[in-house]
Image 1 (spheres, helix red, strand yellow):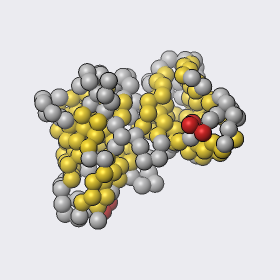
Image 2 (cartoon, chains in turn purple, brown):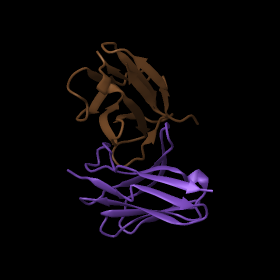
Image 3 (spheres, rainbow over the protein chains, first blue to last red):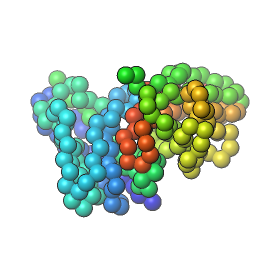
Image 4 (cartoon, helix red, strand yellow):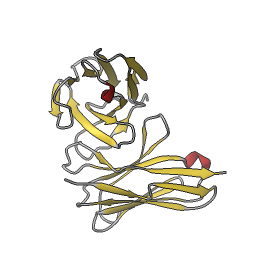
Length: 111
Length: 114
């Protein structure tokens, strides 16, 4: 079965610094999703990547899927306290709607 | 455009009682998914439903758990005779189609079993 491994597990950065979160799959990805979860709340959809080499950006967040479609990275430029939370990568191994998720990366941004 | 709605947001049940969790998908979405997030564990898929049909229930415990998505009204996740191990956050997501469509999540229902 497919598994997703995220790194790092947690991250503390100073406001204004850039950071990267990685998500590695044990098998080829046919759709990679990035979500953000604030403590005690639901998941906020950030981006979905499907094609090898694809890159998408929204405000200061950029996500990439490598050419082999086994690794994705999420990059935040000039981090702000509002970026704090848990970032989750998800995949749909069977392309049937059943998402699996990585264990999450907890991001703290110090003002 | 309202997002995915779940109620109640918090639910407390004594062992042996029944828990009913409701989910109203986003407007225009006909696919509903339920996930569970146990303390110190990741988010796990439970069940995938379309209107009046269960598409994939491979993540549902064999006993005490059931889900439905009737023609009219919200999707319901029902847990009978709850036990302490059922305490978790239950999230519902919806999408306009199957497979590679984005899933949009609700705020979750936090179930506490005392």
